[in-house]
Length: 109
Length: 273
Image (cartoon, rainbow over all chains, first blue to last red; front, side, top):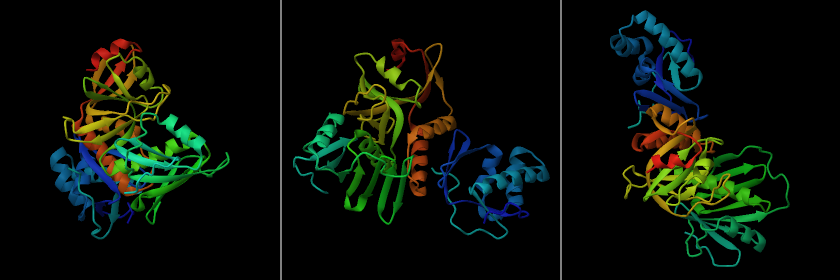
């Protein structure tokens, strides 16, 4: 499932993480190796849109461009880098098919 | 629930209100335990768990230099160079293999409590803690941060719960923060066990030594990161890692948190009330 080289992939939050929005910053912990990540606002928007049923470009178009006033092509390029990095750590799942594996909530209450 | 028989070589050690019975066939080791955990021995307790301690000649018992904690087929196994232990929570019993020293059993008890607390929303924390005016204050930081220094500077109206490892658990009753801190026998440089009592948590301070005494705000995400760095947790268990993460975030969202920059003099306690 980890293949960041797929063009315009479906992305999903890994079930092997825990996430929480604290003070506007998304904190994510890998349950596998306890590595802690914190996301900026743009990355948080992508994370929250990573439902496994939506392609990356669509997530960027829906959640990033209108909110942060950025061109889709530039935003997608940045998003691809972010997705590749988190996928390499097993925090995001990437596929050319919709991902139906149970994803964790966007954040815990 | 196994009864802790009042035979000669058993001792029930109650930390955080949770009695654990240790059994040994060595009266000398029993005395060592009773002295080490003085104040936390409860002869009348009905222990939640029971461990047999098998004493072996001094030497390397495990090849693991660092502590390893794993779960497989209903059994937790803990090991480090100086001990090996198995714990079957469903049967409420376990076995520890070590040579006669207080450090190995101390490590096992810490591990057991971290595992139990993880499911209760609590944790053990690298922190001194103390009670003043009926409220508990936590002072967190790694070695050298000033936990022992601050503990030494405490005025007479302060009761020390620990100078090294704090025990924190959610408890709504009487605690505005929703948490309660308990005394522990886990001592640091002060080499003095804490008082066996508890109080509602009023605040947590991240320690930093500096040129003056002052309190600084700590953003929530930074507080969570720092708190997680100071929580004791050893288990290679994804489910529990998630629970500990959520517990830390929950704590940060409920408890007043500050950075306490302090000079090593007693005036710092004027800010802790």
